[in-house]
Length: 368
Image 1 (cartoon, rainbow, N blue to C red):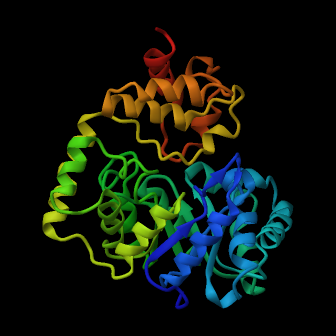
Image 2 (image 1 turned 135 degrees about the vertical axis):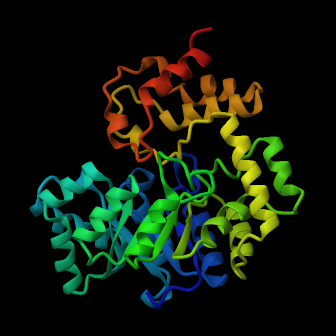
Image 3 (image 1 turned 90 degrees about the horizontal axis):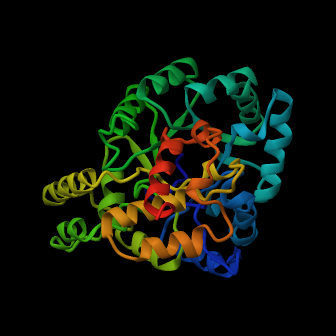
């Protein structure tokens, strides 16, 4: 892990898109600025950006820079293998897609009580440890979405795990559904450094309601700065990832993370007030990971519809209705089209009652 420069990483999950395709020219520029700013950690997974993330990483990073200029993380995702024999071919295809001879970090993706059993049944940890012994993986880790007690069990059963990627932000810190703080404590208990995902909760903590934004602006602090620095300032955090979708986001984040300073007491108090404002609005805690959309039989763009409902609750303006009817449901299903098959809930890292929430969306937007 000694090759990591600074504690801020570029997540290849929400990349810029132009005319429906990856905007590789813009991604190249973002990669260049990121590296020039002194950072070198990149994170991807096989299914990100509808399977195009790894390929974009090869085109925009690995084919343009020598291997020692960057640290690269990829993941073994459970929906791409069904038996042990599937794992090695999948892994080799990921190396080829990324254009590298090895991964610095390889994570067992989205571990939970249910998912962990699938990985055990297929000996995924054992196969990955074999790949590590062969030099194709430098560090074995997990990404995790479940309660702290499940994380404790996994790390006890597989002490070979070297790093844990957890969801951590100031809204989820003591949320009983996510247990960010408790999960970080389990990482420290097992002496495993933590990599933070969703520090801005899928962008929710950068697009704050006006009253919440004012709490931070009074301190001359941006919402992104407060969210990312809150996560990076926690004991035991090795790296904070941000999925940046344009140059402006990258430049802002790189600017305050170059010379990182944790939140001071005044900023922490402001963050506490923002947290209470958000809790009082009862917003849907969706991070827009989009895992739920892949298997939806009615092609409902679930995270976008949740964002519309959240926007309506937070801002009460016409924009939410416009985006719902004129953007997100033009070529995809409406909330009322849900057939309640439950596939979305089975894969949701946040454990959201998606079918029930879609009913709420339908009441707001479909039944008028």
